[in-house]
Image (cartoon, rainbow, N blue to C red; front, side, top):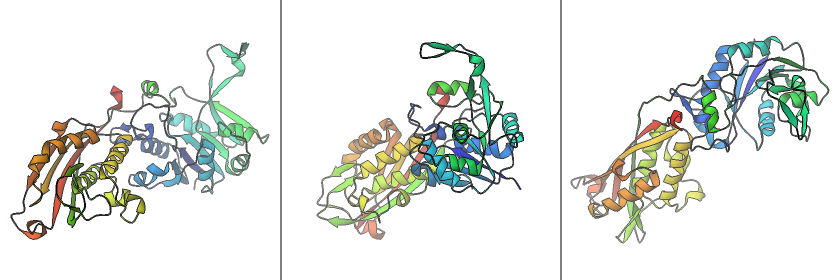
Length: 373
């Protein structure tokens, strides 16, 4: 049984990575970056447990991909690490950053092999350029570039992080206790992905899959008198609307479910539950905008939307152009990629009795090709 727990840190907001997609969600093939890193480490060595630290916004979605331990991060790297360490029961802990996504197996093996050498084992690179500290040159032979992963004695790392000092890595925290730090050879391949320019240096990553992902959504709402009606984000000139927790835009709700279905993100009730007072009377256009933002942050591009509105009334044709334009604006796609069809139910069922409207929607997504960024 291994006495090492692996912690992978990925709760940051990727502010320096100027792209709609979070770097954790860049796709290599059909695999998001964070999962690629976790599976790589899992293959390279035996760990008692693998803990992934992520943001609250990403946590539930990540759980759909693999059965690791997931921990919500804090406001800083150190706070995130402390949250994860509360779950660690092994004598040693190996900590790395998800953004350091091309760590060679041989480097992982060197670090683990040296675990008895010190309280913290750290991979390093030699400095090959001239160094200055302010206006003064310094001896580059005495300097090292520090990398992750770093292997620490768990109890000592926990103790060190009780300090009010903010440490930039585990080794400096361990060293603050007067404990020994041991250096092993790092690798130039273990480059940390921080900015868009760094994408050229992470050569282990394949281009995203070209697969198209399809989702289906359906929603139904009954009519309610003396309420404004909105369909596809457009106000309809009638004296009744939809009975719903939000504004009841049945078409947008079906689109949201189709988008969530294609991305594997669940359904509208999970993201915007009708038990949450925050969504009482909510503008469905705002919910769709938020959904689009989430979809893009997880590495998807919206291809097209097709929907069928099943209604005896109101009449849809007079509003189709405005509906198409409004949805295209929110979805951030050309309006020819938004198709709206309308039909009746031939007087059958509750729709036929003119009691409400049903909308069916299909959405297609592809993975963002970050190779073109």
